[in-house]
Image (tube, rainbow, N blue to C red; front, side, top):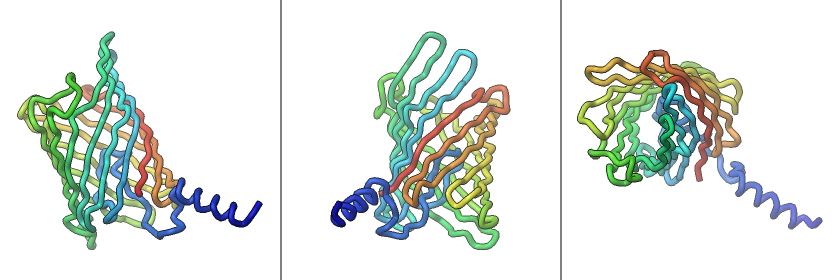
Length: 251
């Protein structure tokens, strides 16, 4: 075969698999698969997609499937990204089954501080869920805001510590829910990462919900990553268990 054929094949493979032969971008950082959002901002001018499928056993009569949940992100500047969340779910309660889209959420992430000694890297994330931009059975009664501060410490070349604190609303009442996450990340190799996480929710006049989860990420290349995670509830009112897998890429 001619040299031109092999050259064309090489170029095609670079395009299809985003092999970083045309640029030296830093490895992709995603907000999935853990519940702890990263303070990292999508590089300016880049478009990033983070999508995943999950199964959650709520209790003996109820299951929820996410088919899928997708976060769409665009880097506006070094310190700002725009965000869009879409999620299609299937809920099974006894013999009843409901499918549809949850309300569309639009928002942003803004970097506030870079890591400096004891001061972690800090960003603010905020969204508004649009109550009517959903399937009929999943529409909210109110426009729903949420926000959280996301922090991260680099402990060593292999270890990191991340945590979030924030507030969200459920769309049907005016009661706020406080959220927290705490995760420890460990780089097994340059491409294979792992984490262990504690997270939970507490609403006024209700018992707090606490969960434990963990998972792995694998970097196919600097612009493409896959992930797997699983977890379970550690309080009686938490979901029994869940499993998820997904992928993240940027262009």
